[in-house]
Picture 1 (cartoon, rainbow, N blue to C red):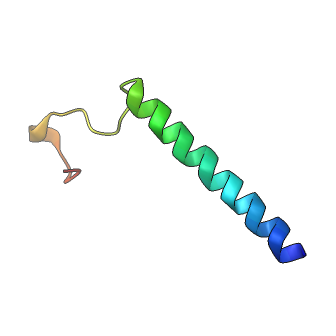
Picture 2: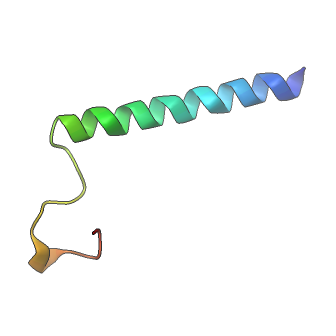
Length: 43
């Protein structure tokens, strides 16, 4: 039973992280500025 609770908690955390990343991308807040002269290999 404890394993299921931990699994549900971790699944929820991963879901929230992915949702936050998707929202940031839609709002234009990404790590890549699109300036290839300053790129550190993000593409």
